[in-house]
Length: 222
Ligand SMILES: Cc1cc2nc3c(=O)[nH]c(=O)nc-3n(C[C@H](O)[C@H](O)[C@H](O)COP(=O)(O)O)c2cc1C
Image (cartoon, rainbow, N blue to C red; front, side, top):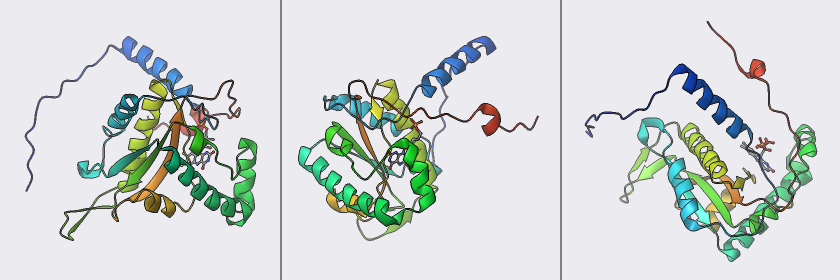
């Protein structure tokens, strides 16, 4: 059985006043993040993307299994291929797989089956989840709370992208099996999300969505 040694945790804490200032500043900064659907083709250094993925991989995970892999796609050919395949699925979804209510909810966002951003953005991060690990001899070990863990890692990824002054879009072409095939991923990985990352296109506009207010999302039990 694996046993951990326990080491001191070097933790920084703050006065109430400083905590309030930091948490307010952080909230304001996080609230300035927006999903962007029009990207500039300008390149973003690989080292920046590596830091962003390293940050995502600091997320907590069920039993510390870290059941994720981040594929960084910048190859023109692969991005074109992913675009074609994603658009095939999206066209089918918009032309009948999504119900009326879903299409109505998407209407104000102005989305459709055309996914130009997959080709234009300098990087596509494909987040893969790993329901189980293999040891190369056909033995499988299940991971725990895989969706929760990979969702958390993706949250960290998005804030790291925002922190670097970059923008992203969570994209969910459905079904996503084509990604595993195109990227030749192993059997124990499943596509989770496809995320174009880069700089925004010049004069980009975003829908004027409203975030729920605190009293809509917070319940006290004092
Ligand atoms: C799980 C998930 C799937 C999403 N899928 C898509 C998508 O396929 N296409 C798209 O344009 N936006 C997609 N979005 C982006 C949402 O529309 C966007 O996050 C939402 O409108 C809020 O806007 P904001 O990110 O600017 O706060 C997705 C977001 C999430 C979290």
